[in-house]
Length: 236
Ligand SMILES: Nc1ncnc2c1ncn2[C@@H]1O[C@H](COP(=O)(O)OP(=O)(O)OP(=O)(O)O)[C@@H](O)[C@H]1O
Ligand SMILES: [Mg+2]
Image (cartoon, rainbow, N blue to C red):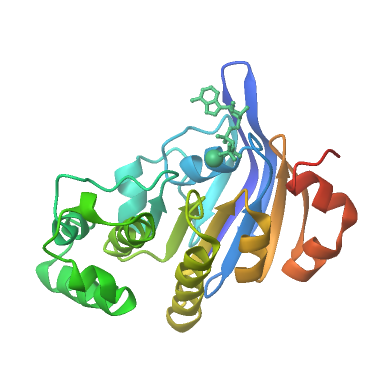
């Protein structure tokens, strides 16, 4: 599905990612965990085409996508839910959703809308209301819903737990995991909150200062004393 090979990204003198390689399989959630500034958002933004890699490549369904434009990448089937959600508060819930996948056919968009509403019934209930009237958890569902409207094969979730109560985060992410399992969707979940991420994901990768410090099943990552220090940010 997605293969990241020796990816390096820098902002001027700051090396945000250094020689990162990982694979994201379909049908399940893969976690990327790491402390503040580890390079998690840079990885997501690079996959979505918003940052240009210095070296290395990203291969999606056998095709090199690194260096392509963000709008091409989303059409190829990769959707990013950025850090901080980014729904448009002046628009209604339904209009926010309809903004996702504008280029798709009417039929495709209607099918996706039905699917999003069945996944997140609260959005259907509130479809005519302004996005600014939603709670934080509902806005996160809207942000994920909008990404799903593009009909993705790979969903990139950047720090969805930010500012939300743990129970709500778990509910939303469990739905996402279920959807991945049932529909073959690949999900890359970035979290500073490692406990939440590893509860949902089957496997994970630990990033530290832009480099892969370790990877394995969620159980392995939880059991490793050394890796726990790194992703919990308690020193390495
Ligand atoms: N636009 C930018 N210009 C310069 N440096 C940046 C920029 N964006 C990120 N950085 C730097 O790159 C490094 C990685 O940042 P990134 O945002 O990818 O980390 P992160 O793991 O997402 O952190 P957080 O958990 O705080 O969201 C950090 O040192 C950060 O200061
Ligand atoms: Mg980040």
